[in-house]
Structures are given as structure tokens and as C-alpha cells.
Length: 412
Image 1 (tube, rainbow, N blue to C red):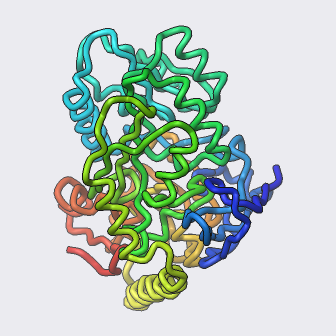
Image 2 (cartoon, rainbow, N blue to C red):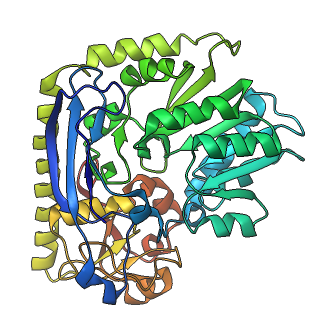
């Protein structure tokens, strides 16, 4: 399927858009493939733009959602660190919003049900929305799952069948939606008048300050800051009432935004104007901020490739550890292939036996990886570094990680 090229900003409609970094033509980062699919693999531009009117950072080249999600093999629960993270989020939501038996909670993009499983209060009505085949895993775990993309029609159907939602969550989803105005309209239909919508996604300022360019891939259409979100949501009858920064998320540091329908009764937290002021001081509106990013990305690339070249020259064996989607942005932009990293370990059984998109490196189980026991492992799931240093059998057996982000180094 061909790629659509937007001409206007998703949030404000302006056509004054400026490209500030290009990561080349890449395949969709979650499109792991079989050997017989290599010849027909498609690549699309991975270019990032900045809206000069509302300051939303976004991709304009849109890979059809069906291309990304039809053969989606990402299983959230394969990460123990993510299970703990979403368990904590569900517990905090339950306490903060005084959930009780019979309340409806909806997770859009529920994947294998990881967040819904985190709700432990008896008799909550737990509903997931998931377009990919991973929905089958959530359904098998006993969740009520609607298979498809979140639309106005689906919001009406959920509300008619189960009632309107006290809590709707979208973790690493809100930034993935091309027709985001329709998505916001659907939210307003699904939320109860006193309901709350919670967005969790990578935060633009963290991405820039830590040069986390690997969170850029076709699935992530927008890179969020609060400045463009507040007026966009207001246009759709929704108001931001609180915001917090989260040091750990599915793709690294995140922003968590709490949204309610206008008139929902919650007072706006002081954190909202404070973050807006911080973004203005940081320079979300300044072109120089965006020009600096590309040169910083190139410095990371050169530093990692220098480490790999030095280790290869010494005769060391190098594997890969973790096969997240963002790792494929890194591998393809750096030009790393199986000649340098001959295999990558991942605990997700759906990925094992497949090849990484673009770089075509085989995915193996952790057991196979430990049998081969390379001297070093390029840690593509670098955001779980602390977790792996404490719990990884590879580290216990004397292995060492090449950590590419945010500052390239070898540990321990």
C-alpha cells in the first residue's frame, strides 16, 4: 500500500511546516518479517516536521494503519518492567478517581490487556480497544475487547452496550492517530460527564534533551508537548486539568496528561500552566531548537558506530539485546546489519524466528542467546537498562551492554 503525504498540521491545519530531521527511508518499525518477505519489503520516508503556528512536531508521511497493525507482533506483557509500570498506573488511577464496582474503564490500544490486568478492584467493567491480532491475546485473558480502530461509531457502540466510561486510557496511542480530530470527538462521546481521559506518551522535551531519536518511527505520527495539545483539545470540548512527567515509559521518559470534558468539575492543576511556561522558556517555538536536534542525532550515531568498530577490530563478538520497534529506527539509520550484529535476543515468542525490518537480523530466544553468549550486546531496549542490570542472566554471566542512548557507553 502506498504512503499518504499530509500537507497540513494535524492539530491546527496550518501548511507552514518545516522539516528538521530526516532518518531516511525505512520500513515500519514493528513489521518484523519472514525470510520469504524480504524481497517485497516496503520503505517509506521517515522525516520529521515542525508546525510554525501551533508547534506540533509530527510526521507528514503516513503509512496506512493496516500496513502497521495487521501483522503487529508487539506484546506489552513480554516486558516485566512494563507489567510493573502499568500495574502501578492502574492502581494510582483506581485510588485517585475513586473507582468502584460497576465503573467502566476503557483502554484504547490495549495490546494484550497489560493495563486492564493491572486493575485489581473487583467488578470493574474492563474494556479494551485493539486493532491488531494481539487483541486475541487480551480476549483469551478474559477481557472484553473490541477489535478495530477507535472511531465515533465504536465509541457509540461501547457506550450503548456498557455505559459511558469513568476512565479512558491511551498509553502510547494518542500520538499514533492520523485523524486525531475524529478521535477526540469519539472520546467526548465515550467519556462520562465526570470521566477522565489519560494520555501517556513520550515527551518532546525529553526526546530533544536526551536525543532520543529512536522513538521516531512511522507508528508515532506526533511527538507531544503540552503547548499544541491544550488548544487542540479545547476545540473538541476537552480540557487539560493536570499533567505530570514520568521518568519511565514504554519508549522512555513520558508525559502523562489528564483530560476531562468541559464542565467535568475538576479544577486545573497548577502543573498545567507551569509546564506551558517551561515549554515557552525552553523554546518550543524557536527554530534553533529544531536545527540543533539533527546534529545531536548524528553525534550519537558516530559514537555508537565507533564503539562497534573498536570492538569488532578487537575480535569481540557482538549480539543484540531486545527487539523493540524503536531499535529498528536505530539499526536502519545507523546502517547496522547482521554482518555486525548477527542475532538479537527477545523474550517475545511472536518475534522469535523472524527478521528485523530493514536490517534483517534474526531474532532468537534468550536461551539461544545465552548459549551463544556474545562478549557484548547492543542494548536496543536501553530504557530498561536499570532493570536488566539487576535481573538479566546475560549480565550475571559476565556479559556487557553497549548502551546507545542517551550517551553511548559500555556497561558494566
